[in-house]
Image 1 (cartoon, helix red, strand yellow):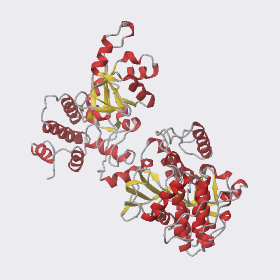
Image 2 (cartoon, rainbow, N blue to C red):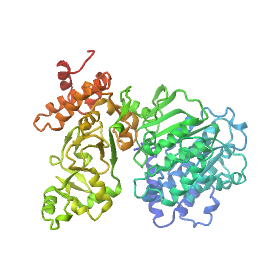
Image 3 (tube, rainbow, N blue to C red):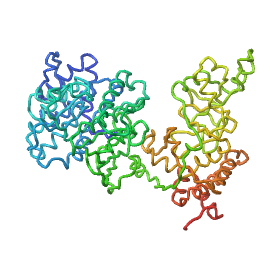
Image 4 (cartoon, one colour):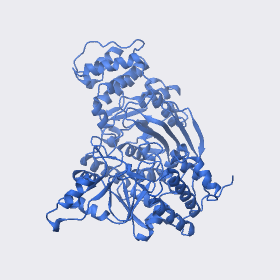
Length: 636
């Protein structure tokens, strides 16, 4: 969480506001707050009733601190569930000012002489934290407060938030809120909100900054409506019509694309050549499949100049965040990386050469070894991969039973023609360790309850044709791969008697004879490092791997050879190692497998193997013992 920059007496004041709004309205409370601090009242709020004076904490008055209080207050009077659904989270002043300074530091040399039609935009301005930061920065460059505010434009979907931003800037600059260019509306469609856009007059956005709403599309309350998705697809597809990109005519707004990421693409489209965009975004934008089109489009004609990566969870949203700085039309060179706790940019990493993917910046932060693999094949050349979604998850949850009950159900089946064979095992991520299936050994959580041996009788699924067909298709020899893990963790199902529970991935070889070779590919330090470098930022935990089926299929496989064959043999031995009672015996086999697969990939094992075994929590004496027996080539 963000260290709270708010004094205790201000926090108590905001708490009192939450109590008052329960007996009144958000709008009336905000009028009272503005009245108390001497801020001008926005004309949209003039009809609101006047509440009794609320005691403002000592030291606050009609000054810049008062302007900040308005932004805090509008969040305080907005219900938590509404803030979550809309992705509305207040940006602490130190964060907004630090990001704004990085974004604007190398803009026009003389902002005062910049043409009147050039602006700084925040398309999701909320109570005005970033607009205030930009106004203060411009004032430091010599502009009057009124002139600084005149260079700003803001939009927010919440009319009260937009009114609050107008009052905050009006209070700070001592101007009429009616003269502040902040509008209520959809930040994706600002052409409808400003008169010069409507008249097709020339408007230049020199910088676009902000903290757009984080709206995870897997969340029930934050997912976009079908109508919103249709409008956004029309907006971004239309923007690509006259651009020769690889995504012309293809879907950019994907089912799980976070709304915040779309605001980065929107900023890219609006910026003038040479302009800068810098926004607070979830770290998932660095890596996820659904944001890949956005990364590729903005990278095609913009330079990534800087990247701030927060090293803890941010804001009330408890989401890890980042802020890429992109310059439209810039030439890609080195990238300045800022890695720090919110809210201070206190640790500047030396500029890095631009990596092939944004996720590699987060991977560098995690200390993931760089791996160069020369391979002409990927997992996709040997197998297919898939995972279930909501329908499969809830379909399995509906008929799940403990193994004993499922077996009883199957045995009592009175209509043989409807019988679909013995029960199958349900496998969650929690039951997967590297080549070690924990079903029947460890319990697991599934569908809000704990299970000892989760299973299903397929007959019970017969009335759900879609899910039944999906389960039947999974009853083949395969590997099951967990998600949200420190290394890639896979188990083998040579008999086809296991069913993956969402989000477990199913890797199904085209030729069953390659099953154990694929098992070795998914149980070694090379592919774990490659996977984390490609997906860092996508998982819930900062240092976890979260692969999609597409990303798993893109992992490299060796170019053949005896070492890979030896790895396949070790993988098979590990998967059938019930005779190994001592954990150190399994660890020894894992270390040997990791070393052999480094050889198969023609990658030096030392640093890589140490990194992998450390993440597996394998004692270093085991590694040293394997080295001493000549299993690992070592410079030491």
